[in-house]
Image (cartoon, rainbow, N blue to C red; front, side):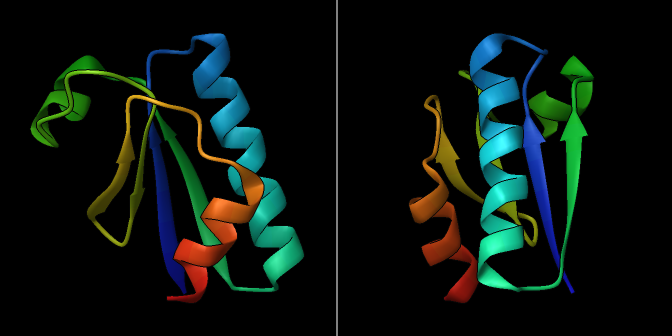
Length: 78
């Protein structure tokens, strides 16, 4: 099972990214756990300076912008 982490403090862009990740998992049929991380210390551990960030299986894939559902689906299949 894949693990998706959305790093962000709870801003509207972060919430949109979480919703897009959940929809991408649903549409792709890939087994994945979506985790929202809002703790600033934990976010800093990923060397993220701008949020939201999308982390798949502990690899930062996108930072500083909202990822679309289609983009996340593509990343999940890779």
